[in-house]
Image (cartoon, one colour):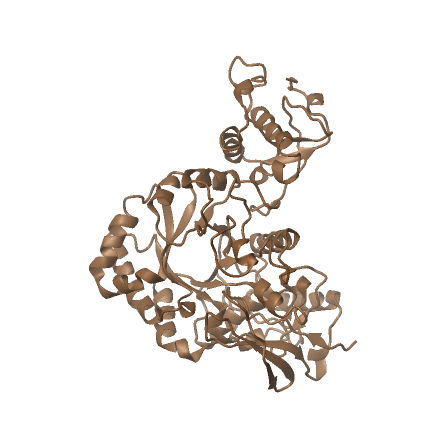
Length: 534
């Protein structure tokens, strides 16, 4: 069956701060548009429709594609890696394999932006993060109160040096050492600082700070080395996808030549110091700015989306995130940086937008982030790097009411400032299961919220502490000698607190999340053994 493919571009992934224009450009074999962010001068190429002869126009049966690709993978078993354009099979679906090292799996983190005037205090944020089993958090500076709040929590922090500080840090080694002495050393290792981002999306900065990045990174690295922390705390800098001049097809991904003056030395620095290349990816913007040509299902990871085939490699793409990632991988390969790890330091979907931002909804935000988390946790990898671990930071922890621009810019959060969830999101990627435990709890609607059977002891304890603290649950009844103290088990006490919070907050799915430690049941917990009804 031969069909015409609509090709969603993976390039419009940076966060624009104004309107985007889409003038038409003719290209060979395609219709294309150029989108340009008002905050950057980088042209963005969007291929709307690809017309190529032969097999690359066909949308093949998915089952056959999967079987062909599995056969290709089997034929490559035992090989550590294969050169870029060498395939292990004559199949038209033969995957390109890259060097892959053993790893402990992809990780999910959350960005903690603070451009708002209604956010909870850092200590409450630290409690919220622990409650929801979030293990990795990115902040955009080195705020002392935040570093103190996250001490002894076990949460790994990525801290940042803002673009406005790059000049001073890059000019003098002593400035980098002073920053490290004041901003990092007093809190480390109680606060687990693992990454320092030196600048953020430097090519998008209104002031030209690109040339300052390498000297600043070098000075910070030397400062860390001086105190013996250069192997424990890694240094990098984040980029928008505007750093590419081309992203479709993914195999033709290429960095913009005007950034070569700093990019090549930066990549060499990252390889030498075993630090990741950091990129911010936003499929939402590609869909928003070309919704007539980009499938929403494709942007959201939905399985009903139409496949997109890379005409150079035959690799099949079922979502835009993978296409964006592979464009970066191929761009790095073109510069002979084959083994450099890529980390996604921002990705997400807005939960609310203006009238013309119809895709900015809580349902779509929940769908995108849920599918992204599963994609990462399962080590799905990408078509070009199957099984590759990818660390991703979800943007963002809270809505930020002081951000300028369209309504969506202020509504990327997964929590409201009052710390309640905007939508249900399991950040562990594991989901809830039915429980076999109960507690001294009552229900007015035929459902209860109790401790999940698969919840860890620490996760249950963190959730209990939160419910009895910031959650405003009256837990006096489960204190010693009080009527609901027995049975004296963590699961029983947690279930009491979980259900109290759940019933007081509308008995919604969100109110029974507790970072995966809680789950709903329609069975009266008093029917279980070892339960006394208060």
